[in-house]
Length: 518
Image (cartoon, rainbow, N blue to C red; front, side, top):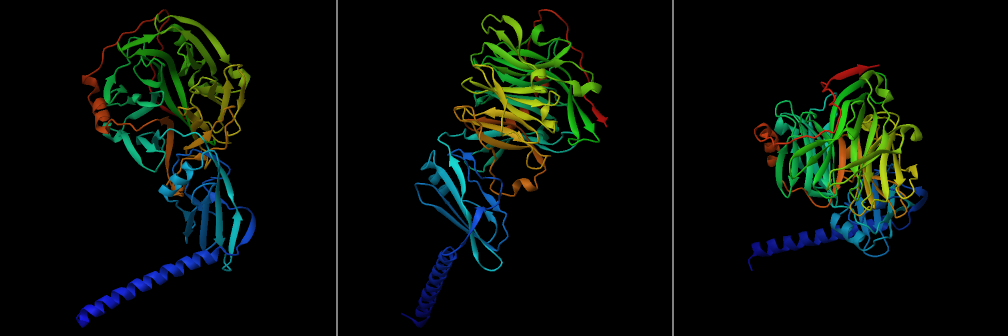
């Protein structure tokens, strides 16, 4: 062997030896730092607040920020079975390896999960905090969530409809309003958490107001306009048969407060309920749920499909917007004959001393989750809006302890009925973020936690607000281009429809405006 080759080989072996020594030194240093730490008799402060919560066994890693002064950090995550996860970080930001996290959670359904936090102080001593104690549930959550994200401004002119994998951090765009001249995307709904049966409302000054009906990767532009309806569909609810949609015919406009905790408010100038038959494209109106002197909104079918629940209040002029107080109503309905029963008041606004909105049934029909706010049929801009739960067997209801001092709204259930997701402004009072809560068999909702992000400081600088989180069992497959094309070509492909009306008259259509109030 030549001297040059010997020299090259020697240099290579020397490099390997140095790297090996460095790795050994690093490992020895890591082991040394946890030999004799000083015990701090409290848990470490972390953000987000992932302390004392129940989490799904299929949730993405709960990355967090350690809010304790120090120059070095060490975290041990462990449960009864499986290898613990150890993370050494100079920065306070802790990012958990996703594969090891999934393996640890999968081996410990129904068991405790501990976060043991160590921080090196300014005197070069390690402090060990009491372990943070969480619980891994024995019930999965649906694998995906959808939501709108809206850029906060006086007018909603920049918004996107997104889906996010809950087992990872992958977010993808379903539809952005830049693809149809920055129109509005209204509420989306699914049949039993199935994205293969989806309704999405759109409002565009340029392209019209279609309802997009997606079934098995096919999208159709639907007109909900008739002699008695404006065609501006808002909220929708699927009948369990999958053949009928209950839809609202809203006319919202915004109020701007100059002296209030929440500067924005939304007033419903007129709102009726209608039915849309998917097979015939008929828009069916019924006087009992479309009374000219009342607003009827937030439809929700009972799980057997025999009753339509909704929220209703006397119609008020816009100057009396604080007097809008919704009762929880229901009416029986026979899907085969189309016959309606009589209106019933399930729970009055007077009984709860507030306005009842957004009723949502658990999959088994045992519980009804709803909101109570001081007033309004649009509670997301209410500074104080709480979550309530009714047991349908006996009609008893209560405010959930997970409610915060800020608005908690836009809730929905997982397919197995063990999880709810809702929007909350509890982090900063301004921006809505998705929170999850485990609901046990007795209807007890456990401490909620915010949607995990890869960067634990993600929400600190995000000026987009989340809206209408809905859990779905699998990702939406239809392409954004198909959805935007359906909106852009809507006026050329309006589906035919008819309307029926037992008696009464339609409400007048109002123009959307922005009003400024003191």
